[in-house]
Length: 509
Ligand SMILES: NC(=O)C1=CN([C@@H]2O[C@H](COP(=O)(O)OP(=O)(O)OC[C@H]3O[C@@H](n4cnc5c(N)ncnc54)[C@H](OP(=O)(O)O)[C@@H]3O)[C@@H](O)[C@H]2O)[C@@H](O)CC1
Ligand SMILES: [K+]
Image (cartoon, rainbow, N blue to C red; front, side, top):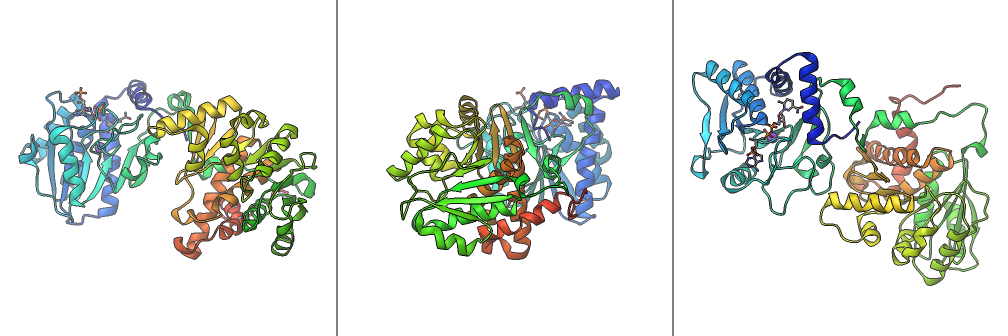
C-alpha cells in the first residue's frame, strides 16, 4: 500500500469530488459517517460521556458530523469548538448549522484556558481539532488544551491524525500533540504513523476506505510503501515438484568468535528454516563442535585461527554470502573482510560487526558488490551515516547511502524500514517480544536465505523482514512477549510462510 503526502491526499479528495460529481460536504459526510459506524459498532449505545473537540477546518467538520450521528443514536455527547481562528471552513459551517438544527443549541466554544471543560478519566474524547491541514506547531492555549486532554488520561480517539502531528515532517521539540489511544485515518496511511519518534502518538491504527477514486490513487507517485501480508504474499515464489536442494541456494555464513558462536548458529538455523538448500558456515575453530552438534543440517568450515576469523573464502561455491554476526572487529578480521570484499562477486548480506567494520573503514563501502544488503539497528546506522536531527533526516541520509553505494539498507526497529535508493518499504509485522538477543541474527538468516533462493535482493529483504516479524507474531501467541527467544522466531518461519496464504501449506504441484 502506498504512503501518500498531505498534498496528494487533498488532490485525491478534490479529484474524487469532481469525478463523482458530489460536493465536498457529501464526501465529508461519507468519511465521518464511517467513523461514526466504527464507534457505534464498539460502543453499542453504552452511556459513556463522549466529548468531541472540533477545530474550525475540515477535521473539525468531520467532528461535527460524528457528533450529529452519535446524538441521533442516543449517545451522551458534548461538542466543543476549539475556536482558534475566525476562518471557519465552508464545510465546517454547513455542519455547524446542521448540528444546531438537531440540538437547538450551538456547540460550546473554547477560546482560552478558562473555557477548558472538565474531562474525567472515564470520558471518551474524540479529537477532531486538526488533521492533514496542520501547518505549524500548536501554540498558546490550543497547545495547552492538547496537553490538558493528554493529562486527563481519558480514552482518546483521533480523527484522521492526532492533532498537532504533521503529515509530512517531524514535530518540533516539545510541541503539543494528542497522544491518541486509537486513530481512525482516512484512505491512506501517513509516514509519521510509522516513524519511531511519532508512532506512539497514534495508538492503535485503523484505516477507513472513504472511496476516493481508485484510478487516481493508483496513478499517484510515491516511493514509500507499507508492507502487510498481501504485499508479502505477492513476493512469495512457490516451489516446483521437480527440484532439488541445489535449486534453493548455497549459502555461506561467516561469523562468530569466542563466546559468540550462538549468533551464527541462529543465522544458519533461520536460513535453513527459510528454505535454504545448502547451508555452510565459516567459523573460528572454537565453534566446530558447537555448530556440528547444535545444527547437524549445516556444514562447517573452520578458519585456521582458534577464536576469530582471519580469512573468508570468497571463492567458495555460494550463491550468497553473509558476514558479521558475532565476528568481532579484531584487526585480523577487518583485514579478512577487506580481502574478501575485494574478491567477492555475488551480493552479500552484512550485519552487526560487519557493519561496524564498514563504519570504521568507510572506504570499504566502495567494495560492496551492487545489491548487497546491510541490516543495521539504529546504533549501527548512526555509526554509518552520522547523527540525524529527526527520522525524516535519518531516512534521507540512508537513501543517500543506499544510492551512493547501490546497496539495500534494512533499518531495524519497531517498524523496520527497507531502503533501496529512493524507494522505502515499511514493515508492519512484528511485536515488542522480538526485542531480544539474537533476533537480528535470525533476520539476517532469513534474508540471506531468500537471496540465495533467487529472489531479487529487494524482494528478499522486504519478504524476509515481513516473515521475521510474522514468525515472531505467531511465536508470541504460544510464548508471550517476555519469554520469546530468537530461536523461537526461527522455529516459526515455516508457519509464517504458511500463514501468508491463510494457514494453508502451498502446494502448486
Ligand atoms: N482529504 C481527504 O481525503 C478528506 C479530508 N477530510 C478531513 O479534512 C481534514 C483536512 O481539513 P483542512 O484541510 O481543512 O485542515 P484541518 O486539519 O482541519 O486544519 C486546517 C485549519 O487549521 C488551521 N491551522 C493549521 N495549523 C494551525 C495551528 N498550528 N494553529 C492554529 N491553526 C492552525 C488552518 O488555518 P490557517 O493556517 O489558514 O490559519 C485551517 O483553518 C482531514 O484531515 C480530514 O479530517 C474529510 O472530511 C474528507 C476527506
Ligand atoms: K484530529
